[in-house]
Image (cartoon, rainbow over all chains, first blue to last red):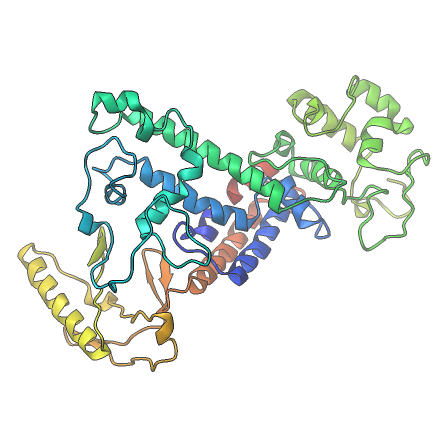
Length: 316
Length: 131
């Protein structure tokens, strides 16, 4: 609901750097609302925890999605598709008149737009026609795709006027999947996260986000390394004692609180027997029964709960 | 002319603002005459006028002359909304995204009460609301 409102028009318009930064600042608030993480949580971690990509990545994804929507539409239905370059590989023979491809009337004679599949030179001297620029965006995602109707020789031999609906749907899904993969790759490359955080970016919500809001928020905070655990201090208390308030033997990290704290051994052996890890792929954070037990385990000794929930002079 | 369902945009290019306005007026009269044959009428009160400017025309004087359509005057605007897009004379995207940001910020007070701190919707549903 928020992203479609915020990014409406990003298919065609590219925001300036300043506008993009303002949108991203607002998007951080949405990410915080979705995770219950602290304001001090680094924004890179916040994005990964919330499974909401940073705004610059969403902005770069929108035109790609719009482009594949155009090239996967039947030209008889979508006037934009009918205006693709004559050499754009297409099964359909239907095409708009060449003069209708762009509003070229009135342009100065020296303007010679680039061929649709020619990269833009640096510095940019010539540009693609708008519809060719749309087609050019799809090149990285169509390469080697066997189901791509435009290069499927079997269907070309059948001389189908309009590719079957199912084929178009499959192609669209495959291209969309590639765009999602490209987004995740760019996320890892362009928005590095601190070394102490070991979880990978994802677009689907984490399974534990289905727990109650309070409990899922505790897990988010502990995973993000910015929580009420003693060894994960905030900037407000950088010199605070990091020892576990329950056992006093080790710093109270997420791993210590869940896996090794001796004072919680009884509860652990009853609820989390056999659990050995808290990484992203560990069953503890993906299996529903284990997640429910983890929620109970966290709530019994109030692990990572806000200190304000307890009366004064009462250890959490 | 570009149209989408019942939203029409008439565009004309001329070396002068005055001739541009005259041409737009004639275009509208032609369009209205054709529409009358089909028993279709236009809501003139919703008319908006904008002059596109190229980067080289950035410092040239602005045109403030109105266009007259069916006795009503419409002055050129600094930005106008068409199909949800906010256009400025220089086709700058900042105005559009400023409006989008304001709209998104306005949506937050509507959905925040669904999920107060520590209660309400699960974070999974919050994620669905965000995306």
